[in-house]
Amino acid sequence: MWGIRGIEDLGGGYKTVFEFQSQFSVNNGAGIPGPGANFDRQAFVGVEKTGLGRISFGKQFNLMADFLFFPPAMLDGAFMYGGLYNMRQGPFAALEIPQNPTGAFDFDQTAGTSRVSNSVKVTSVSFAGLRVGAMYGFGNSPGSLSADNTIGFGVNYTIEGFGAGAAYNETKYVSLNEGHDGIRNFGAGVSQTLGKFYLNALYTNTRNTLTGGVIHATQVGALYSFMPDLRLGGNYQYMKGNATLTNNKAQQVTTTVQYFLSKRTVIYAEAAYQWTGGDVEGSHNAWINGEGPSNTTHQLVGRAGLQTTF
Image 1 (tube, rainbow, N blue to C red):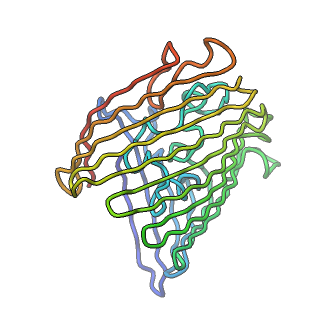
Image 2 (spheres, rainbow, N blue to C red):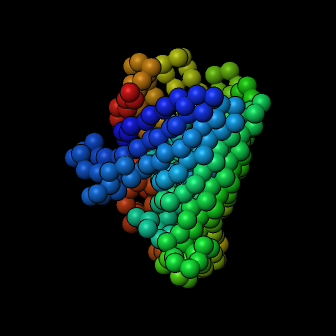
Image 3 (cartoon, rainbow, N blue to C red):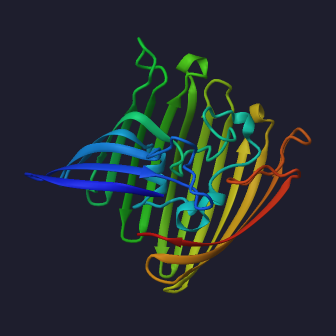
């Protein structure tokens, strides 16, 4: 990922802010998700007031990501150590999320893979550890403000080593009842730092409001720092669909070892293992996020990599 971020001091505690963020494949340099994807992750402009907060306009992360995934709360193990493989995915293609590469890729929308175009976002600064936010994304259905739109709310609280957060997001899609139905997400979680341990727990609920398909997802995890430059993380997830999704379920364990070469460069090794079940034989094969589906009810993925920030 790369981008451009700017701030202009307007005086009186006011600042103009802007950010353009893009993503590409290291393997071949191609834009993600595809051609014409320049600045497809975020592209917004806004105004900040010292001691109050920010209002911004454009294409932006929804509040599931802002208040559950990203700092300061960091309630999802995928952010700290699990990465792409730890984002929610399983035998839930029947959830049928529109404009989604698998129908269930990052289905609870916590990891920043779902952004909102034509949106207005208001987020406060931290007031003694408490931060709140709201978002509205305008649809593109003439004559109807309620069709094809997005509504979101978020709150988190951080103090010393403790963090907690909750968020809600509902995005409607033209392909679902002409823009009057969509995908509804909400979630809540906590984190705690105890010495060399970082602990996290997160619950999310995802519903297709047209079909009634629902997935409950729960994760617990820990990150242990053996020394300043060596860390080990582990995460367990349980994901369960309702009868509309033939009661498909998945359990997944993800582990990661990280070694920091410097403050901004880390090498890592990661493994993720998923096993599944459900009512209909052959329709609940394992499917770890970022990979293709397995041809069995089990899937194991390994990865080694180098990450640098600048």
